[in-house]
Image (tube, rainbow, N blue to C red; front, side, top):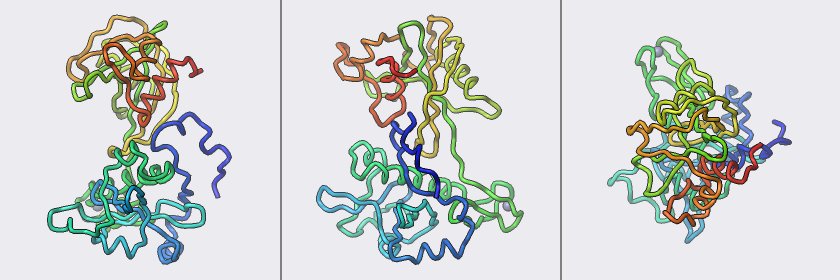
Length: 316
Ligand SMILES: [Zn+2]
């Protein structure tokens, strides 16, 4: 068993999708007889994804995400199956079924397809189950998009309980991918910089962010992105917390960054506006009491943790 002593103790555990107490047993995934025993056990359950959408059991206002494999087969023809981990003593798997179409939508009345963002925002299932759904979503998305060998184009075969795909032709091994994104709260003196993308809801300002590129450190990715989007030179960068972000398979790496200048030049492409905010103003944005109706991202996003920690001066 992995040591649970530090579980939930770090800052990252304050972010949405981060609480996932499953014991992944990564060291035993390659043991097929062991995995077969888990699959056959009567207490084993699976979460189900219809394409990228979780399938939930609905009973009035009560929702559940765990099904038996027999139920999963009833709901849709199963594609890839992956072992997520042990939930206490019981094994939990993830099953991918076909996407909902007009032909297959006459499913059972107690089944609902609900997107993961809504499940998390509305708290339809418990926090640890939301973490398991996030793990399943990113992993199944990878299967759905990476069925053929990137080296030779042959259809690959699932192995290691759903954590690997092997090419029978060129023997290449393919592993699930996670895409790192840096997200940073830029500060100078008593102000922080927040920006708006054109797609944001009216009045919403958030941290700047961007994908980490090949051959780049986290610190240099932060400096490059802030300079690209806001024209600001950045000095010191400190790691703050991270967050699994299953849209579709990112890891958000939250940082605090110190600006060496205060003259903002918005690129006009990724950002339509970026400006400096005081602690007081940021607190109003978090409380939704800002006089101009500016707001900050919801608690689900790591940007909320970065912004609120800075606003209350609690981050050091
Ligand atoms: Zn191949």
